[in-house]
Image (cartoon, rainbow over all chains, first blue to last red; front, side, top):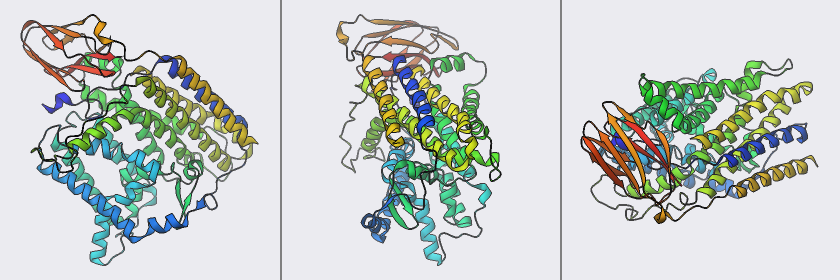
Length: 440
Length: 123
């Protein structure tokens, strides 16, 4: 039964209209022009330095580091988890169970705007961090330290794998809106996170928790940063430059961008017709396509990074992770374009459904009799403009971020030519994204 | 100075884009009630359905009819907001959809065969 209503991104009815070709072309032209303008006239010496950038904000800093504030956020995170757990364990296996919206909309999509506005939100509310903290308190040990030191070479690879597991569940797994699989996914996530925390301490969460890695990465595009233990307000560009280059960062951004692009692509007539007329199972084809999208994005980006001359201080294979932070704005721009209506409309729907987690007609939150505001869907031209603007804006920030990194790490004589391949890769991502918004 | 030029360049491009957007403004929310009925012929035989995932443009509020020729009974789901579900028997059945007022892409699926029959582009 529920499979029939399985659509769009796990749940959902109508989807956005495609953008007009004129708009897609205007966006692509703007992206191209900006790219080469930045290359031609931008600064030639590094501008951003983590040690000096940003204005300290002592009052706000005192507030956010205060025990009361931190505990309040942790309690909030645990309460939401408990509420979701009740719906997941005791609720009905119907699409009216709010767990699906909490899982696919609030958690996966909602985390992006929250992190963009307020900084590393998941780190602050993550219930797995809270449980790890509580265990450490009870046993009198240090929550930051586990039995072993986290292996540096592992970097963000486990997070990339976790993110892939989520998008696979959302976009490929045929029973993504049945209660059993969602419950199992969450249980596995909790178990792995708690085990990892016990083994490696809370470093594990910063490196391997897919949601914390995603949220904290997007948070680098916010204005909130840290200089040592002082809260500073920085320009998003300066803040983005402080992303630590760890192994596997490229895989993280490749999964995030590749999967979102695949989500657009799989609704296109071309793919729908192909899958439905093929003799091979659609499950296998979707699996292969998701993997192919992520792999191609990763390889294209890596290729764009390594095609440059280098000095003696760096090796080519270090470059992709050094530059990977610069794709984050492209991802965020495309996520806005792809998920805006979905977040606004299904986010509201989830809030309404959340008032009755057990499906017995109760109205616990008092939101049960609200109705969803579909204003955004009724203004398709405005929506299309917002989409293209956010994609182009993301591209501009990405190109500037990559330029700054090139100026920092490439030797003078390779700075201009060394950036070109990456610039082409980024233009390819942006134009490809716009094409998918137009064609799907 | 360079910073200023960069800002200028960005502003210029954004403006170019904005005018691009302005030009492509189309009249939305057309008067649906004056439209004639959109009829979509669907043939189901065994495991195959025609059309097979094609896009069909309809106006907001336009009456839509699905004429289903089938060799066996089945069920069709229309993923509009709110969702619509229809059952049909063997032979020819005409299904009248509730007009769709909200712009967007709406999938019409064969629930029985688990395939997308058409995607309605409602604009």
